[in-house]
Image (cartoon, rainbow, N blue to C red; front, top):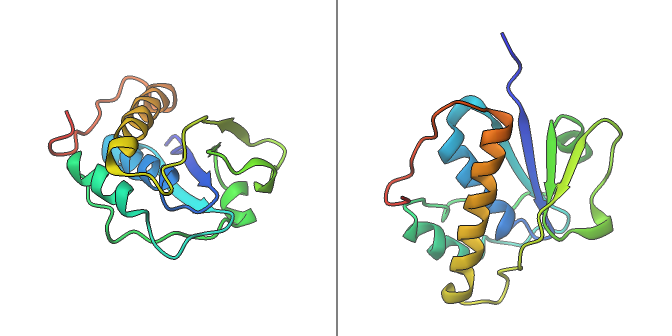
Length: 144
């Protein structure tokens, strides 16, 4: 049985971009890809504008909590996708790293967060096509 690829999304606060990316990947890839997210300096709560933007896409992240990045999470990932954590993300040999240049939704209203959310979905869909090619994507409610 083939190994399921594992993706770790990392941003500084694990309150916006990495949360949106993780939930999109979970919703669209189902159990074909293991998904985690973490932050180098986690916030106390998920960004309310990110919660609202994802709710508009039919996905509830209101109950999500920012988590601290651990070396184990990085070491056990097939792909680590960073989103603005700079030099604070640990780097291990043999792990595939990618940086997604995305605006930080921190302190922004819903109008500014919607295009970030939509760009994240595009990147996640491309990632699914790469890591789990030829498999159908699940569709979050109202996210079409």
